[in-house]
Image (tube, rainbow, N blue to C red):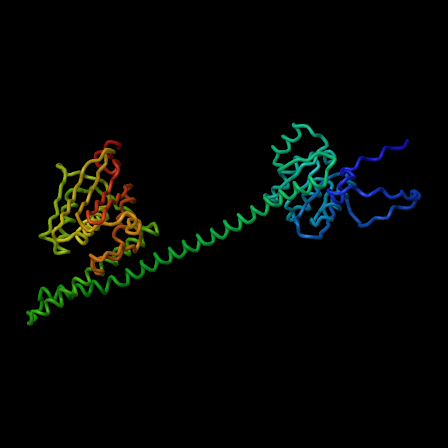
Length: 441
């Protein structure tokens, strides 16, 4: 009985060059005697082993088929076109190969002896998640294709394979693999940059915290000495000019101490260490006290600051120091940037959400809409010729208001127009109201 020759996986036409016809077949040589083995171009161990060819650098491919002739022919065609190829003849050989071989594309026969090539896809991807698998099947039915794609295959091809179609599918896989590699590299670079920025931000916060603590003590000592001079605790100073010098020392030290306090609070907020020390706070009384302190500090006793508060005064759960700082920062800004003839209003009202809205409105120089983000940024100072530089502040007041307000679950809304004025509104949620929390408990 003479067996029929097995059909080649590749058609004769286009085997070497898909664009040209295959050369005429050469006359067949006489068969070798049965006792003499046919010569082999290379030695390959099949079964659980694998073979490899490496020539160009077009891409790394793993070919898996239990048909020795099939996988040999496939490897030769791919090798001739510059691909690096490794082969295996069963699942164990493929798994062993993929562990040490960073393949980009896998060509898998749907039948591997007693096993299924589809089952191999997930096992290979455990080692190479970015591997693109092309399933080769002898059945051109839709069911086989859908099953292959559902099991994680990128594409499927039916036998006999045409080299031009095979190369086209492989190149699509390699293009996607290269794009993913570039995307991964870009993501890694962005992650490194993000980590570096976070480290720099942390270092900056640590620096401000250390600097603030180191400077606060000597400045406090300077202020105490200035106060002692002004109060003439040890007898009269004599010439009145000494009082002016002492006043300058105290005012300058107080200003610097305020900036250091801002920097320290900002560093604590950035590091996530600014915590609420909650208590029941009479917000109306707190606002009155804060406005009075600002008027005394800025010598604004005669300035027109209208205060409108509800009666009875609302009580909230919050950090009294931080809430007072919020009020003082906003009122201080209004005083600094409003001319003597201008007006300022400070108000507190219930809002539609059942919370409270604290509002500071002035008829000062105002801020252009495009400059509002800068005013809210750390160290952001909006330059204005109408305001001396020594009155423009350190650019930490509003960012601190934002941080402290958000810590209370609230939001700051800033509206402004040059030459008209500015309105800053702090909205506190209903959960901060004492009555609301008592009812919930």
